[in-house]
Length: 265
Image: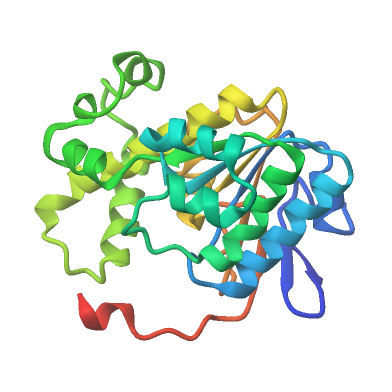
């Protein structure tokens, strides 16, 4: 990967983008931007906002899909985008009351959508639906046509299953019962498939997906379920270099101070 140093971060560009001097330049011709996040990292979220603002200031008018809104709240989200005057109104009308998101850093994107009348898309499978998928399988919460379109009735590739299981296990500090991992993998796959469906449906006009870094990985995330030639760019905002070509670009930002997440699991 090519490294480009800026005042506050290190930008790592994969081969497909490495000929460009800056990230906005590299992404100009990409109709679908999959922009990751560490959910509580203020610097990463702020820099992601700046990237989106630059593209919109240049005239781009994409749909914006956000992991922070559950898919069953799409009607609430549509109504809020019609009647609300500010981001706080949209958040109150369409977000899950127990969701723990960094709303202060997410408000600017919602404000951009309101100002430019951009569609906001509810990109998450809810915890309730994910729990049903864990217990009962994809058909418990996904439409049969969606299941067929993404081949979820067939056994999934071993590399996808193994890597997802490893990431989920590590994310839960190795404290999940191993018997739970197959179901948890199904839930993660369901979320990625739903996000991929939104990206595909809106790619013609342009679309931005805002989701955790795991969802935008090319090897196991949303891009895995899309045609790799469809002009997708996967950008991670990470606290340490990942490498391995699993993203098109990595923006390395300072680590956010936080308690040890494993201490309370």
